[in-house]
Length: 129
Image (spheres, rainbow, N blue to C red):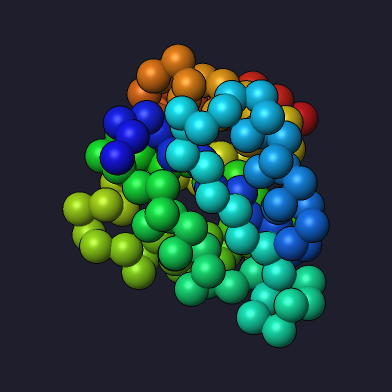
C-alpha cells in the first residue's frame, strides 16, 4: 500500500473521469494511487455514492485522499460517500475546490512528492477561480 495521498476523480461523465485519470497517470505514473468514477449506475450522466465510496477505499491510506469533483451533485455525493466511511478515515478524506482535470494533475503531482494531504488540497485549490 502506498503511503502517498490518494486521488479520486468524480465526474458526471465516465469519459471525463476516465480521461482525467489517464492524464494524471501519464504525468505521474503508478506511484500515486488514483481512482475515478463517473456516471450513474445506469451508465448515464450522474454520480453514484457507492462507486465514489469504492474509489475512496481503493486509494485510501492514512496519508489521506483528495477528491476532485466536477459539478454540485458530485460534491454532494462525495460528501455522502465520506460519511459512509469508517469514522477514523473521514478526517483523512477531503474534497478539493478546484477544476477537475487541472486540479487532479496538480494534486497528484504534489502527492507524488510525498506532500501532506493539506498541501495536496491547497495546491489543487490554487487553480480555483
